[in-house]
Amino acid sequence: KLLRCTVGDVFKCLADCPLIVNNDKSGDDYGTVGGNSTTNSTTGGGNNTTGATNTAPPVAQPSAATIAQLTELQTLLSAVNNRFRELETACTLLTPLNAGPMNLSLGNSSHLGQDPHYDKTNLYADMISAYRWSDKMVEYSTLAATYLQQNPLRRSHITPIYVKGRPQRRPPNGHNIGAQQIDIFIGTLQRLLPDLTIEVTRPFGAPTVLKVTIPRVLRAVILLRGLLIEWVVVKGFDETFDDPNFDNSHVKRLRRFPETAAVTANMETERLDIWSESKHEVFRKVSEHANAAMLHYYSPIHCDVAIRTYLNWLKSYANLFSAPCRKCNARLQNFMPPTWRDIRTFEPYHEQCRP
Image (tube, rainbow, N blue to C red; front, side, top):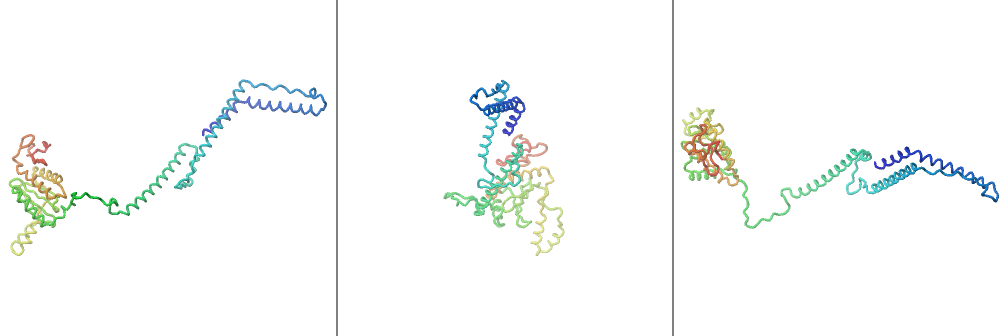
């Protein structure tokens, strides 16, 4: 681009300087005349050569304007020469597209580089960069797939080194505990927590349902999967967990026959409803807090410690209607007793007063 501009300046200078062209033509005419005179003088013959030679007219001296124009033209021609040298140097530094370890053949898109417009030329350079990045990505992904296929079940092919005597973390098995072990553990909890009444039932098969009763305060149903708590519902002491849609007439007829006692017991357990909420707003709030505490005490590894701590937290509701709020020292706020218990200290708080 610079070379074209410089050449254009040269032609523009020649177009604006007619004196240079006219002087060149006049010089040629003077030379022709002088040459004819010398030839005539020579052919005339004779010893007196000086007398026979015609004197040439004097050459006119160039003016100051002509000299300035010639100097400017000479400067432009030098600039053109320099631009040619720079172009040759830049061409020697160019590398063909198919040079190097990766051969790039972009087909007809390589002609974009011949367009002098800067934006289109930059588009071609971006295309080359994108193709090279794509080739590198394919190469690296192939190598990664090769290494991953060698170790399909390990994070690393290096054998881990464990320190001798270092305790290993136990795998979570709280969800995979037999019914007999659960019954033994619940019997132990009943002896540790005599203020609670815990009844174990299995109306849905493998899942265990605990009916927890705090005398004269509330009743709760806890659904277990193994020893992991999955659902908690709290109701008032005067409420039951019986399904209102259960038909009890068939059970009453079977009770007349002693041999159907086991069937009658199973049918009575099927009437358990663990999804309906309490009709009292106080116990609905307690159910919300109980489910939040269930998530806090969740531990699939130390599930026995988690359920023991949870039942201790639930036992703190024995003074639901008698203990004042720890912060405001009031028993009622918005006609509600302190329904929230601290996770660590088991202290009572109102819903608006909890820390």
